[in-house]
Length: 426
Ligand code: GCU
Image 1 (cartoon, rainbow, N blue to C red):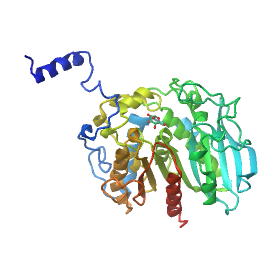
Image 2 (image 1 turned 180 degrees about the vertical axis):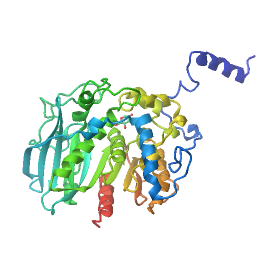
Image 3 (image 1 turned 90 degrees about the horizontal axis):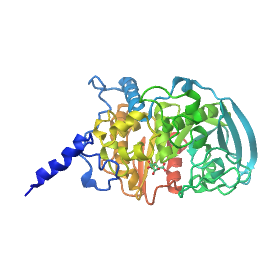
Image 4 (image 1 turned 30 degrees about the horizontal axis):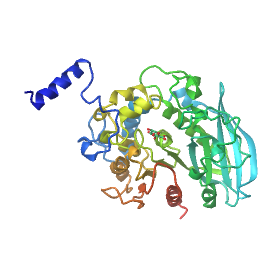
Protein backbone atom coordinates (compact mmCIF):
# COMPACT_ATOMS: atom_id res chain seq x y z
CA UNK A 1 0.00 0.00 0.00
CA UNK A 2 1.27 3.47 -0.83
CA UNK A 3 1.57 5.79 2.16
CA UNK A 4 0.39 9.37 1.90
CA UNK A 5 3.88 10.85 1.69
CA UNK A 6 4.84 8.65 -1.27
CA UNK A 7 1.61 9.47 -2.99
CA UNK A 8 2.37 13.17 -2.49
CA UNK A 9 5.87 12.71 -3.95
CA UNK A 10 4.54 10.69 -6.87
CA UNK A 11 2.10 13.45 -7.72
CA UNK A 12 4.60 16.26 -7.34
CA UNK A 13 7.60 14.78 -9.12
CA UNK A 14 5.97 14.63 -12.55
CA UNK A 15 4.80 18.23 -12.17
CA UNK A 16 8.28 19.35 -11.15
CA UNK A 17 9.73 17.49 -14.13
CA UNK A 18 7.47 19.54 -16.33
CA UNK A 19 8.80 22.69 -14.70
CA UNK A 20 5.49 23.34 -12.95
CA UNK A 21 6.01 24.57 -9.38
CA UNK A 22 4.10 22.65 -6.75
CA UNK A 23 1.62 25.46 -6.13
CA UNK A 24 1.06 26.36 -9.77
CA UNK A 25 -2.17 24.42 -9.78
CA UNK A 26 -3.82 26.77 -7.33
CA UNK A 27 -2.20 30.15 -7.70
CA UNK A 28 -4.80 31.25 -10.22
CA UNK A 29 -7.65 30.46 -7.90
CA UNK A 30 -9.14 32.92 -5.44
CA UNK A 31 -8.64 31.94 -1.83
CA UNK A 32 -11.37 32.74 0.69
CA UNK A 33 -10.02 30.71 3.56
CA UNK A 34 -8.03 32.58 6.25
CA UNK A 35 -6.53 29.24 7.27
CA UNK A 36 -4.84 29.07 3.86
CA UNK A 37 -3.20 32.48 4.11
CA UNK A 38 0.50 31.66 4.14
CA UNK A 39 2.76 32.66 6.99
CA UNK A 40 4.53 35.70 5.59
CA UNK A 41 6.89 38.44 6.64
CA UNK A 42 6.62 41.87 5.09
CA UNK A 43 9.55 43.85 3.72
CA UNK A 44 10.39 46.64 6.17
CA UNK A 45 9.78 50.06 4.60
CA UNK A 46 12.29 51.54 7.04
CA UNK A 47 15.22 49.32 6.08
CA UNK A 48 17.16 50.44 3.02
CA UNK A 49 18.26 48.07 0.28
CA UNK A 50 21.76 48.02 1.83
CA UNK A 51 20.30 46.92 5.17
CA UNK A 52 20.73 50.24 6.96
CA UNK A 53 17.80 51.62 8.96
CA UNK A 54 15.88 54.83 8.31
CA UNK A 55 15.34 56.63 11.58
CA UNK A 56 14.31 60.15 10.69
CA UNK A 57 12.02 62.00 8.29
CA UNK A 58 15.18 63.43 6.69
CA UNK A 59 16.24 59.90 5.81
CA UNK A 60 12.92 59.01 4.18
CA UNK A 61 13.33 60.57 0.67
CA UNK A 62 16.28 58.29 -0.16
CA UNK A 63 14.40 55.19 1.01
CA UNK A 64 11.25 56.43 -0.71
CA UNK A 65 13.15 56.58 -4.01
CA UNK A 66 14.26 52.98 -3.55
CA UNK A 67 10.73 51.74 -2.89
CA UNK A 68 9.34 53.71 -5.81
CA UNK A 69 11.97 52.19 -8.10
CA UNK A 70 11.08 48.69 -6.88
CA UNK A 71 7.40 49.25 -7.69
CA UNK A 72 8.40 50.52 -11.13
CA UNK A 73 10.68 47.60 -11.80
CA UNK A 74 8.58 44.76 -10.38
CA UNK A 75 4.93 45.82 -10.36
CA UNK A 76 3.64 48.64 -12.54
CA UNK A 77 6.52 49.33 -14.91
CA UNK A 78 8.32 52.57 -15.48
CA UNK A 79 6.62 55.57 -17.03
CA UNK A 80 8.94 56.70 -19.85
CA UNK A 81 10.66 60.04 -19.22
CA UNK A 82 9.28 61.42 -22.48
CA UNK A 83 5.73 60.61 -21.34
CA UNK A 84 6.37 62.21 -17.97
CA UNK A 85 7.67 65.35 -19.63
CA UNK A 86 4.83 65.61 -22.15
CA UNK A 87 2.88 68.85 -22.02
CA UNK A 88 -0.61 68.47 -23.39
CA UNK A 89 -2.15 71.65 -24.84
CA UNK A 90 -5.58 72.25 -23.34
CA UNK A 91 -8.64 73.57 -25.15
CA UNK A 92 -11.92 74.34 -23.40
CA UNK A 93 -14.54 72.93 -25.77
CA UNK A 94 -17.70 73.73 -23.84
CA UNK A 95 -18.75 75.72 -20.76
CA UNK A 96 -22.23 75.22 -19.28
CA UNK A 97 -22.79 77.84 -16.55
CA UNK A 98 -26.22 76.53 -15.54
CA UNK A 99 -25.28 72.90 -14.95
CA UNK A 100 -27.07 71.13 -12.05
CA UNK A 101 -29.96 73.62 -12.15
CA UNK A 102 -27.59 76.54 -11.95
CA UNK A 103 -25.66 75.24 -8.95
CA UNK A 104 -22.57 74.38 -10.97
CA UNK A 105 -20.57 75.23 -14.05
CA UNK A 106 -19.47 72.40 -16.28
CA UNK A 107 -16.33 72.78 -18.33
CA UNK A 108 -15.19 70.28 -20.92
CA UNK A 109 -11.51 70.44 -21.78
CA UNK A 110 -9.56 68.50 -24.39
CA UNK A 111 -5.94 67.71 -23.59
CA UNK A 112 -4.13 66.71 -26.75
CA UNK A 113 -1.15 64.40 -26.80
CA UNK A 114 -1.15 64.04 -30.58
CA UNK A 115 -1.28 60.98 -32.82
CA UNK A 116 -4.96 60.61 -32.06
CA UNK A 117 -4.73 60.61 -28.28
CA UNK A 118 -7.02 63.18 -26.68
CA UNK A 119 -7.89 63.19 -23.01
CA UNK A 120 -11.32 64.71 -22.35
CA UNK A 121 -11.46 66.22 -18.91
CA UNK A 122 -14.83 67.16 -17.42
CA UNK A 123 -14.74 69.69 -14.63
CA UNK A 124 -17.75 70.49 -12.44
CA UNK A 125 -17.32 73.67 -10.39
CA UNK A 126 -19.59 74.89 -7.60
CA UNK A 127 -21.12 78.25 -8.54
CA UNK A 128 -21.67 79.38 -4.95
CA UNK A 129 -18.16 78.80 -3.59
CA UNK A 130 -15.37 81.38 -3.59
CA UNK A 131 -12.66 80.42 -6.10
CA UNK A 132 -10.26 78.77 -6.29
CA UNK A 133 -11.84 75.60 -4.89
CA UNK A 134 -10.24 72.31 -3.83
CA UNK A 135 -11.04 69.36 -6.07
CA UNK A 136 -11.37 65.63 -6.42
CA UNK A 137 -9.87 64.08 -9.54
CA UNK A 138 -10.62 60.53 -10.65
CA UNK A 139 -10.91 58.45 -13.77
CA UNK A 140 -14.26 56.97 -14.79
CA UNK A 141 -15.06 53.62 -16.39
CA UNK A 142 -17.77 54.48 -18.91
CA UNK A 143 -17.18 57.91 -20.38
CA UNK A 144 -17.72 61.38 -18.91
CA UNK A 145 -21.33 61.26 -20.10
CA UNK A 146 -21.94 58.32 -17.74
CA UNK A 147 -21.23 60.51 -14.71
CA UNK A 148 -24.44 62.60 -15.08
CA UNK A 149 -27.49 62.30 -17.37
CA UNK A 150 -27.39 65.92 -18.62
CA UNK A 151 -27.65 65.49 -22.43
CA UNK A 152 -25.31 68.43 -23.00
CA UNK A 153 -22.27 66.45 -21.85
CA UNK A 154 -20.35 65.28 -24.92
CA UNK A 155 -20.75 61.58 -25.67
CA UNK A 156 -17.46 59.79 -25.66
CA UNK A 157 -16.38 58.47 -29.02
CA UNK A 158 -13.53 56.39 -27.60
CA UNK A 159 -13.16 52.64 -27.20
CA UNK A 160 -15.64 51.29 -24.64
CA UNK A 161 -15.53 48.26 -22.38
CA UNK A 162 -17.74 45.41 -23.41
CA UNK A 163 -20.72 44.85 -21.11
CA UNK A 164 -20.92 41.80 -18.85
CA UNK A 165 -22.20 39.67 -21.74
CA UNK A 166 -19.23 40.62 -23.85
CA UNK A 167 -21.17 43.03 -26.10
CA UNK A 168 -19.55 46.31 -27.03
CA UNK A 169 -22.05 49.09 -26.52
CA UNK A 170 -21.49 51.69 -29.19
CA UNK A 171 -21.69 54.95 -27.27
CA UNK A 172 -21.24 56.93 -30.43
CA UNK A 173 -24.72 56.07 -31.64
CA UNK A 174 -26.65 55.56 -28.46
CA UNK A 175 -27.53 57.59 -25.43
CA UNK A 176 -28.01 54.56 -23.18
CA UNK A 177 -24.99 55.11 -21.02
CA UNK A 178 -25.77 58.75 -20.17
CA UNK A 179 -25.79 58.96 -16.39
CA UNK A 180 -25.28 55.20 -16.07
CA UNK A 181 -22.58 55.67 -13.43
CA UNK A 182 -24.19 58.69 -11.72
CA UNK A 183 -24.63 56.73 -8.49
CA UNK A 184 -20.87 56.68 -8.07
CA UNK A 185 -20.48 60.44 -8.60
CA UNK A 186 -22.76 62.40 -6.23
CA UNK A 187 -22.08 65.72 -7.93
CA UNK A 188 -24.65 67.75 -6.00
CA UNK A 189 -23.14 66.63 -2.70
CA UNK A 190 -19.57 67.27 -3.85
CA UNK A 191 -20.23 70.77 -5.11
CA UNK A 192 -22.54 71.43 -2.14
CA UNK A 193 -19.50 70.92 0.06
CA UNK A 194 -17.53 73.45 -1.99
CA UNK A 195 -15.38 71.05 -4.03
CA UNK A 196 -14.90 70.71 -7.75
CA UNK A 197 -14.96 67.31 -9.41
CA UNK A 198 -12.70 66.56 -12.35
CA UNK A 199 -12.87 63.31 -14.27
CA UNK A 200 -11.43 61.72 -17.39
CA UNK A 201 -12.60 58.55 -19.13
CA UNK A 202 -9.88 55.95 -18.60
CA UNK A 203 -10.32 54.55 -22.12
CA UNK A 204 -9.17 57.90 -23.54
CA UNK A 205 -5.76 57.21 -22.02
CA UNK A 206 -5.32 53.54 -22.76
CA UNK A 207 -8.04 51.13 -23.91
CA UNK A 208 -8.35 48.37 -21.34
CA UNK A 209 -7.32 45.23 -23.20
CA UNK A 210 -4.10 43.44 -23.97
CA UNK A 211 -3.12 45.13 -27.21
CA UNK A 212 0.67 45.00 -27.12
CA UNK A 213 1.27 48.76 -27.05
CA UNK A 214 -0.88 49.31 -30.14
CA UNK A 215 -3.08 52.12 -28.88
CA UNK A 216 -3.55 54.92 -26.37
CA UNK A 217 -0.58 56.65 -24.78
CA UNK A 218 1.46 53.45 -25.01
CA UNK A 219 1.44 53.62 -28.79
CA UNK A 220 2.66 57.23 -28.80
CA UNK A 221 5.77 56.48 -26.76
CA UNK A 222 6.43 52.99 -28.11
CA UNK A 223 7.21 49.86 -26.15
CA UNK A 224 10.22 50.34 -23.92
CA UNK A 225 12.58 47.36 -23.82
CA UNK A 226 12.49 44.83 -21.07
CA UNK A 227 10.11 43.38 -18.51
CA UNK A 228 9.79 46.70 -16.73
CA UNK A 229 7.77 48.43 -19.47
CA UNK A 230 4.70 50.25 -18.14
CA UNK A 231 1.36 48.54 -18.19
CA UNK A 232 -2.11 50.03 -18.46
CA UNK A 233 -2.25 51.05 -14.78
CA UNK A 234 0.94 53.05 -15.39
CA UNK A 235 -0.69 54.67 -18.41
CA UNK A 236 -3.88 55.56 -16.55
CA UNK A 237 -1.86 56.99 -13.66
CA UNK A 238 0.05 59.11 -16.17
CA UNK A 239 -3.31 60.45 -17.39
CA UNK A 240 -4.23 61.52 -13.85
CA UNK A 241 -1.03 63.55 -13.64
CA UNK A 242 -1.84 65.21 -16.95
CA UNK A 243 -5.28 66.04 -15.54
CA UNK A 244 -3.57 67.68 -12.58
CA UNK A 245 -1.29 69.61 -14.97
CA UNK A 246 -4.45 71.10 -16.44
CA UNK A 247 -5.99 71.89 -13.05
CA UNK A 248 -2.81 73.81 -12.19
CA UNK A 249 -3.61 76.14 -15.07
CA UNK A 250 -7.29 76.60 -14.25
CA UNK A 251 -7.66 79.64 -12.00
CA UNK A 252 -10.91 78.31 -10.52
CA UNK A 253 -9.22 75.27 -8.97
CA UNK A 254 -6.83 75.25 -6.03
CA UNK A 255 -4.40 72.71 -7.48
CA UNK A 256 -2.49 72.46 -4.23
CA UNK A 257 -5.60 70.84 -2.74
CA UNK A 258 -6.49 68.07 -5.14
CA UNK A 259 -7.46 64.63 -3.88
CA UNK A 260 -6.96 61.82 -6.38
CA UNK A 261 -9.38 58.94 -6.05
CA UNK A 262 -10.37 55.79 -7.87
CA UNK A 263 -12.39 52.61 -7.57
CA UNK A 264 -11.18 49.09 -8.15
CA UNK A 265 -8.65 48.95 -11.03
CA UNK A 266 -8.88 52.73 -11.00
CA UNK A 267 -8.17 52.63 -7.24
CA UNK A 268 -4.95 50.73 -7.99
CA UNK A 269 -4.37 53.55 -10.46
CA UNK A 270 -5.02 56.39 -7.99
CA UNK A 271 -2.51 54.79 -5.61
CA UNK A 272 0.13 54.49 -8.31
CA UNK A 273 -0.56 58.08 -9.44
CA UNK A 274 -0.28 59.37 -5.87
CA UNK A 275 2.92 57.41 -5.32
CA UNK A 276 4.63 58.86 -8.38
CA UNK A 277 3.22 62.36 -8.30
CA UNK A 278 3.52 64.08 -4.95
CA UNK A 279 1.50 67.05 -6.13
CA UNK A 280 -1.61 65.04 -5.23
CA UNK A 281 -2.40 66.34 -1.75
CA UNK A 282 -4.64 63.41 -0.74
CA UNK A 283 -4.80 59.90 -2.18
CA UNK A 284 -7.92 57.72 -1.95
CA UNK A 285 -8.22 54.03 -2.78
CA UNK A 286 -11.76 52.66 -3.02
CA UNK A 287 -11.90 48.84 -3.06
CA UNK A 288 -8.61 48.64 -5.00
CA UNK A 289 -7.77 45.07 -3.93
CA UNK A 290 -5.05 42.96 -5.52
CA UNK A 291 -2.28 45.02 -7.08
CA UNK A 292 -3.67 48.00 -5.16
CA UNK A 293 -4.06 48.32 -1.41
CA UNK A 294 -4.37 44.60 -0.57
CA UNK A 295 -1.21 42.87 0.65
CA UNK A 296 -0.06 40.48 -2.09
CA UNK A 297 1.54 38.16 0.45
CA UNK A 298 -1.81 37.26 1.99
CA UNK A 299 -2.81 35.67 -1.32
CA UNK A 300 -6.42 36.11 -0.25
CA UNK A 301 -9.32 36.74 -2.64
CA UNK A 302 -7.87 37.65 -6.04
CA UNK A 303 -4.19 36.75 -6.11
CA UNK A 304 -1.21 37.85 -8.15
CA UNK A 305 -1.37 34.78 -10.42
CA UNK A 306 -5.02 35.28 -11.04
CA UNK A 307 -4.86 39.01 -11.81
CA UNK A 308 -1.91 38.53 -14.16
CA UNK A 309 -3.81 35.81 -16.00
CA UNK A 310 -7.03 37.78 -16.35
CA UNK A 311 -5.39 41.15 -16.98
CA UNK A 312 -1.88 40.59 -18.33
CA UNK A 313 -1.71 44.18 -19.58
CA UNK A 314 -2.28 45.97 -16.26
CA UNK A 315 1.19 45.49 -14.75
CA UNK A 316 4.72 45.16 -16.11
CA UNK A 317 5.84 41.77 -17.42
CA UNK A 318 8.16 41.22 -14.48
CA UNK A 319 5.16 41.12 -12.13
CA UNK A 320 4.26 37.76 -13.72
CA UNK A 321 7.32 36.27 -12.02
CA UNK A 322 5.41 36.54 -8.75
CA UNK A 323 2.46 34.41 -9.81
CA UNK A 324 2.11 31.92 -6.95
CA UNK A 325 5.36 33.34 -5.58
CA UNK A 326 4.27 36.46 -3.71
CA UNK A 327 6.88 36.02 -0.97
CA UNK A 328 9.60 36.82 -3.50
CA UNK A 329 8.21 40.27 -4.29
CA UNK A 330 10.72 42.83 -3.03
CA UNK A 331 7.84 45.14 -2.01
CA UNK A 332 4.27 44.82 -0.79
CA UNK A 333 1.27 47.12 -0.70
CA UNK A 334 1.95 48.63 2.74
CA UNK A 335 4.95 50.25 1.06
CA UNK A 336 2.74 51.59 -1.73
CA UNK A 337 0.61 53.25 0.95
CA UNK A 338 3.80 54.48 2.67
CA UNK A 339 4.85 56.22 -0.57
CA UNK A 340 2.06 58.74 0.14
CA UNK A 341 3.68 59.81 3.42
CA UNK A 342 3.38 62.32 4.92
CA UNK A 343 0.30 63.12 2.84
CA UNK A 344 -3.13 61.92 3.98
CA UNK A 345 -4.24 58.63 2.44
CA UNK A 346 -7.61 56.87 2.69
CA UNK A 347 -8.03 53.13 2.11
CA UNK A 348 -11.62 51.92 1.84
CA UNK A 349 -13.06 48.41 1.63
CA UNK A 350 -16.52 46.86 1.37
CA UNK A 351 -17.41 43.94 3.58
CA UNK A 352 -18.91 41.85 0.77
CA UNK A 353 -15.93 42.52 -1.48
CA UNK A 354 -13.86 39.52 -0.40
CA UNK A 355 -12.33 39.38 -3.87
CA UNK A 356 -10.43 42.59 -2.95
CA UNK A 357 -9.42 41.22 0.50
CA UNK A 358 -10.69 43.91 2.93
CA UNK A 359 -8.44 42.62 5.70
CA UNK A 360 -5.39 42.78 3.44
CA UNK A 361 -6.33 46.35 2.52
CA UNK A 362 -6.54 47.24 6.21
CA UNK A 363 -3.19 45.62 6.96
CA UNK A 364 -1.47 47.65 4.25
CA UNK A 365 -2.82 50.83 5.77
CA UNK A 366 -1.74 49.67 9.21
CA UNK A 367 1.78 48.64 8.21
CA UNK A 368 2.39 51.97 6.48
CA UNK A 369 2.12 53.47 9.98
CA UNK A 370 5.83 53.43 10.92
CA UNK A 371 6.63 55.68 7.95
CA UNK A 372 3.97 58.18 8.99
CA UNK A 373 5.35 58.02 12.53
CA UNK A 374 8.66 59.39 11.19
CA UNK A 375 6.74 62.56 10.46
CA UNK A 376 4.97 62.56 13.83
CA UNK A 377 1.71 61.55 12.13
CA UNK A 378 -0.77 59.01 13.39
CA UNK A 379 -1.60 56.17 11.03
CA UNK A 380 -4.73 54.05 11.42
CA UNK A 381 -3.98 53.94 15.15
CA UNK A 382 -5.57 50.52 15.73
CA UNK A 383 -4.19 47.02 15.52
CA UNK A 384 -7.21 45.17 14.18
CA UNK A 385 -9.61 45.89 11.33
CA UNK A 386 -12.35 48.18 12.73
CA UNK A 387 -16.01 47.13 12.83
CA UNK A 388 -18.11 47.65 9.71
CA UNK A 389 -19.04 51.28 9.00
CA UNK A 390 -16.62 52.62 11.64
CA UNK A 391 -13.85 54.59 9.93
CA UNK A 392 -10.60 54.75 11.89
CA UNK A 393 -7.33 56.60 11.67
CA UNK A 394 -6.11 60.09 11.11
CA UNK A 395 -3.55 60.76 8.40
CA UNK A 396 -3.95 57.15 7.26
CA UNK A 397 -7.66 56.42 7.42
CA UNK A 398 -9.51 53.19 6.75
CA UNK A 399 -13.05 51.89 6.64
CA UNK A 400 -14.85 48.75 5.69
CA UNK A 401 -18.44 49.56 4.94
CA UNK A 402 -21.59 47.53 4.57
CA UNK A 403 -22.24 46.26 1.06
CA UNK A 404 -20.53 45.23 -2.11
CA UNK A 405 -17.78 46.33 -4.49
CA UNK A 406 -18.91 49.84 -5.45
CA UNK A 407 -18.56 53.52 -4.65
CA UNK A 408 -21.41 54.64 -2.40
CA UNK A 409 -22.66 57.81 -0.72
CA UNK A 410 -21.17 56.49 2.51
CA UNK A 411 -17.74 56.32 0.86
CA UNK A 412 -18.07 59.85 -0.48
CA UNK A 413 -19.26 61.22 2.87
CA UNK A 414 -16.03 59.90 4.44
CA UNK A 415 -13.83 61.27 1.64
CA UNK A 416 -15.42 64.72 1.90
CA UNK A 417 -14.97 64.80 5.69
CA UNK A 418 -11.38 63.58 5.29
CA UNK A 419 -10.62 66.29 2.74
CA UNK A 420 -12.30 68.96 4.90
CA UNK A 421 -10.20 67.93 7.84
CA UNK A 422 -6.86 67.74 6.06
CA UNK A 423 -7.47 70.77 3.87
CA UNK A 424 -8.22 72.79 7.01
CA UNK A 425 -11.85 73.39 6.07
CA UNK A 426 -13.23 72.22 9.41
C1 GCU B 1 -11.75 42.69 -11.64
C2 GCU B 1 -10.34 42.55 -11.17
C3 GCU B 1 -10.01 43.46 -10.00
C4 GCU B 1 -10.41 44.88 -10.34
C5 GCU B 1 -11.83 44.92 -10.81
C6 GCU B 1 -12.28 46.25 -11.35
O1 GCU B 1 -12.63 42.22 -10.64
O2 GCU B 1 -10.14 41.20 -10.84
O3 GCU B 1 -8.64 43.41 -9.70
O4 GCU B 1 -10.18 45.72 -9.24
O5 GCU B 1 -12.01 44.04 -11.90
O6 GCU B 1 -11.49 47.08 -11.70
O7 GCU B 1 -13.49 46.42 -11.51
